[in-house]
Length: 209
Length: 228
Image (tube, rainbow over all chains, first blue to last red; front, side, top):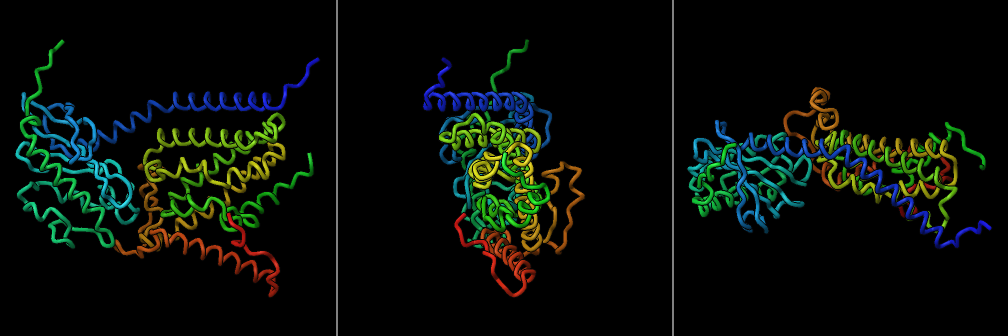
C-alpha cells in the first residue's frame, strides 16, 4: 500500500525540504546579525564624519541632492552637513570613483563654507593590499595632505599626483589609486563651487515638538 | 558502513599526504588572492574550516535520504547556506576582517575543496569520520594559507601579524612585529605573482622533502599533474 513516490517527485520533495531548511537558517542568522551589522555600518560612517568634519557645536543633518555624475552618483544621493545657529558650518560630500586600480573607491570629502577641504576619508575600496591601500587612514597619513587645500591651492592644473606634474605624492609602485583619490577631492570641490547656494542654504526650521 | 579509516590516518591525510592546497591543489583562487598577510590567512582559513565542517556534517547526516541524482544540488544548497551564515556573522562581529576578506567569503561557495570533500568523502561515511576529515582538510588548507600569508607579509611588507587587530580587535594591536625598517619590503610578494611564486616554492619544498625521504627513487606521483 505505501507505494514509494516516483523518483522525480521524491527528488523534488527532498530539494524543497532542503531549500526550506536553508531559508530558515539564513533567516534566523539574519535576525541575529542584523542589528550588529547596522551598528557597524553606522559606526564606520560616524567615525568618517567625525574625521572629515571640523569639530563644532552644530548637529549633523542629511541633505538629498539630485544625481551628480561628476561625483559618481547616477541617482539622487545624500550628503551630510553640520548645521549650527541656522548656518551650515561644514559639509561632507560622498564621492565614488570608478577609476581606481580595482573596483570603486568611496570617499567622504569634508568642505567648509569657504571651499576649503576639512578632511578626507576612504569609506570603501578594493585596492591592492600593501600598495594602493595606503589611501586608508589606518595605513598611512597620506590622506591628511588634503586638509586646508582648496580649488586655488594648488591651482586646478596641479590637482594630480607628482609623477604627472601634480602637487600630491603618489605611492611607490602605485599611481592610479592616489590619482583617483586626488581627482575625486578636486571634483568634490568643483561640485561645491557649482552648487554652493543649494549646499549652504540653511535648512528649513525644524518644528519642535 | 565500510571500514572507517582511523583518526590519526585521516589527520595525516588532510594535513600532509593529501593536503588540499599543496597536493590536491584545490581552492587555489581564494588561497592565492587572500594570502597577503598571516591574519588574512587565519581569517579565511577559519571561515573555510567552519563551512567545510558544517557541510560535511550535514552531507553525511542527510546521505540516507538524499537520492544520488540530486545530491549535487543539495550539497550546493547546504554549502551556500553555511557561507551566507558565515558572511553575516563576520559582518556582524568582525567587520574589519570582513572588509579585508571582501569578496572571498562569498567565494567559499565555489571552493571546490568543499564540494569535493562532500562528494568524495562525507556523502559516503558516517558523521564522525566526515567531521574528522573536514577538520583535517580544513586545517591543512588553513595551514598553507597562514604559512603563505606570513611569507608574503614578511617579504612584502616587512611585518608579521601586522594587522592582528582585524581579527582580535584592538587588543591584537600589540601582537604585530615589524621586522624591516620603515616601509621596506619586496612589493612583488604582495602582488598576484608573489602568490604563485610563494605557493610554487611551498610545493617544491614539500616535494623535495618527500623525495629525500623516499631515497633516490622518485617513484611517487608528484602533485600538479592533474588539473584541480
